[in-house]
Image (cartoon, rainbow, N blue to C red; front, side, top):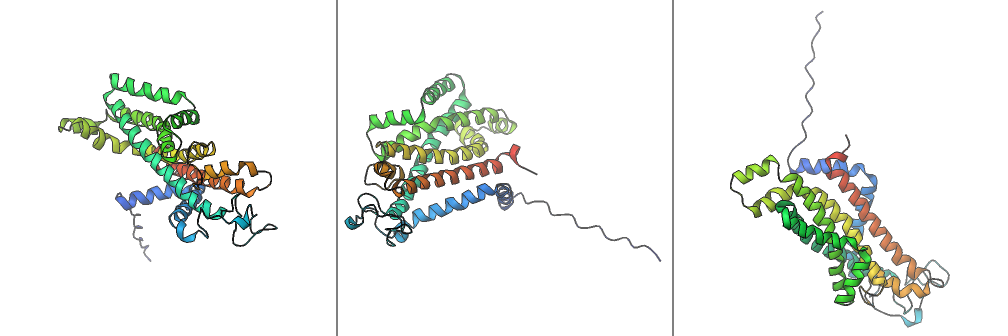
Length: 305
């Protein structure tokens, strides 16, 4: 009886190198971090709440119910089922204001990160590419900005520009800008002497093309992570300015402003302070968890086998 040789097992298909393959690889490393997945789910939920705010909020955020001042949450004695999380000192529904506050806080974070990232990246690319006096001038300005405590500098800028949500966003963007500039500069300096950049120079590419179409796309991974973390910093800074009366002004349902309006009721109406504070905590924590997951997925040194 002859021994039959079994055919060799088929080789496993190599992972795709296309867009779907890269996305699959990214999601694999991102999903390994369970905290990042939870943070992403929470952030998606908050975005949906912000978008659908006018449809899901039980009351208008500015509507006052004079017969229900400082009503406790529905599950507490004296609560009202019409106001699930209670009301504030002038009878406005706290849940509705928190829902609309998500729109303000996420909008602030998005605009601040967009402004600070665009300006910081441009300055960082110029500094890292040209070096010399351009690098020295830009980096010394960034060092001066970083020498001040972020909240103090934002307060000074808002005091100069005038209190208000728009001026607060401009001030926070200026405070966060140096982080993008320094990170971009370091990435450009490490990339600009690589072979693909030299090949592009020999092919006749100009400075603008080299900076923004050849080098910059290869520096985006750390910038995406920094942008995510700056998103949470922007929300915190905006809430702090609102709490100090220099950001969004009453009766705007911004979480920091809500805290400022409620601080005199801390001892006798715990809900007016607790729920806006929890909203800030949960949002910032979710964004930071997503940032950790992005760092794991985008940084080759941190990718796990």
